Image 1 (cartoon, rainbow, N blue to C red):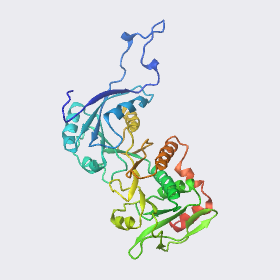
Image 2: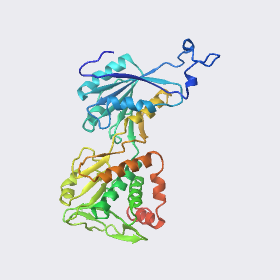
Image 3: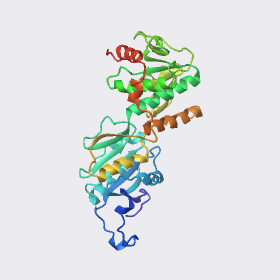
Image 4: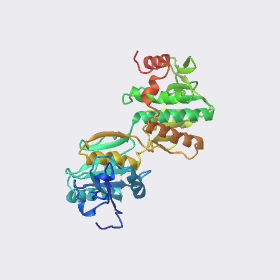
Length: 366
């Protein structure tokens, strides 16, 4: 396969094996006998296509991630890495479909290129996986989307918003969009668990935009030492003080109101919005290929959503954040990835009175 100036290709083979005994045929004296080595399974073809400049991805980082690609099923994947512009994607997929029918194409687009990548006419005889920061709203039926867990993202954003609120001295986090039909209660619960894990005395309350007062919040009461909303009535919040907001839906429509109030926003959905948004879900790191390739090699690849534990759970859009916050980000990501923290159990471990108040007065359930 030739390299062109437009397409920089690196070919690798990932072998999934449990031990050297599955690779070497041993002689009577225990030494490997090369002539006895015979392939038992044909190699499967795959392409990893980096569209634009996706954060955290490069040919070198994909190659470095190859070390961890072991699955214990004796199969192998022969893959190459391409760095392309969106305009080159259609022809590259057509060529791959001709040379490797039934193969797997893994697309990793930069945030500005996600919509364009999803609109491409891909050959019907290849498998399509897109790695993204969130489940795209218009994912083609036959495609697979590999995304981070929204519960883990919610917990991490809640945790870090609480850290920033403490360091700012406001000691309060506003929650925006908790009543949106597209927001799962479990996501809000995970975020609350993250907030209260930092400090149960931090205030956390739903906020909304009011035409008369700008950013507003529900009054708060206390259960034990934990602040919770006491009603759904709105009053002004934090005049002349920078506030920390965790948003579950886009704030683009209300950007001016949040900027005027000095907000810094941790957002679940505004991946392409600049200030006042400071942190958003991140695109899964190249280690996600371990899951994708092993399932493909085992014949278990399926279209639809596939969540993965990621080493880059969040992406920061502001360079002015405290260094301690970035260090805390790595720590909480590690805890979520290795299972030390489970967002669901973290919520259930909160005091029952706190969970009851949130459920009845915010979620509308008893």
